[in-house]
Length: 254
View 1 (cartoon, one colour):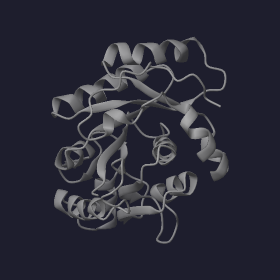
View 2: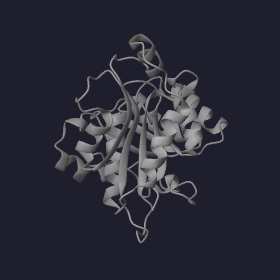
View 3: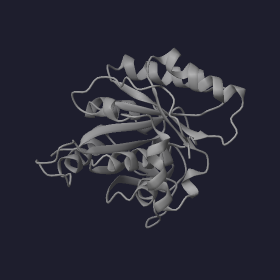
């Protein structure tokens, strides 16, 4: 059974995208679905050092990982390739191996639920993966629903609405929003934002990942991750499924 691609993007850099992707993978596995993790372009790491997809796999227990390309400098991929004097990635360079990877899911044809191929972008939606190739372009080429990882605090309403509008303007389905780092003691802005985000964007808040979740042991992470999401959080990302009708705020962030 070919895995369904789901692109996980952020409203910017350092919003908790990798840990949120790991939590989505753990959630998928808790419902009996196969899951895989893909990072189209990893920057800022030397060869042999575990990248974002490998860290998400370590936390979630996922075994299928694809990193298409790695660039040495901690920059946006287009800039990192230019600084290193390396060729720019083309859309085809990225899409072809991802499609092959999706087609070789471990789940058999008898599986009752479609597997998910979670594809983590780089930074925000319009980050260039190569000259003229954005994370959004990759999602369009894969015809993938998009999950947006957002900040909890001040400024997130505008950043998130701009991201959701860009996704929808491209003709793609925004499956929902995940708050990437929910504080242990949320202030007024955070409490208001988690209500305002679905109202302003017309898409649900699927979950809130507690701050510091990436420091949990893999066993604790896998055990707790499903409780960070609303019931049916992944339904909107599955083929032939409409938007989730679940409540916008999960009941626990244990």
